Image (cartoon, rainbow, N blue to C red; front, side, top):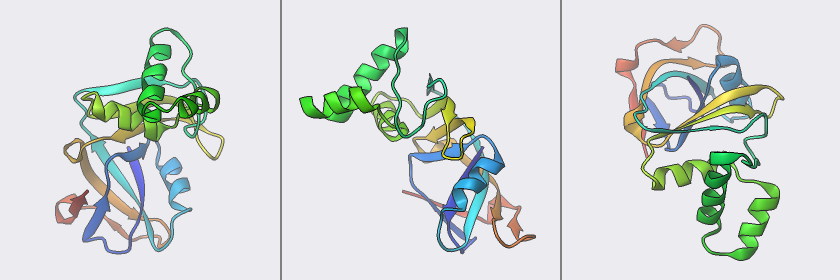
Length: 165
């Protein structure tokens, strides 16, 4: 799994949970291009014990509707959780869809430690699996690459201090 971050100090990597990961290096690099400073791409191992797994069927991570069997019930539960009792918000989410961020927030409140979203349409038009680590214990950094300075990489994750917030 791969994550894109803004940083120029390889000795300290700040990562907030939920932290999102792309399946491919290319996708993480695509997201890194939108970052300021000296963006990095991290190769990580994710060690979920109890992930929430959802297939969004080629819809955008930024607004999707789950409308079949078990997923329909999940969608309704996430809508109610995100709207926090506001009927107008509920109507909006049912019409426009929810985001991966709302799904991650809901998953954390339900005791899941991770999120796996299959067939997620990314901003560059590619469908890929997206992952969300809800707790720091689920992330192991294996390698860090600085995106725009070819040849600079930190291959020894033991020397990296991972600041998780």
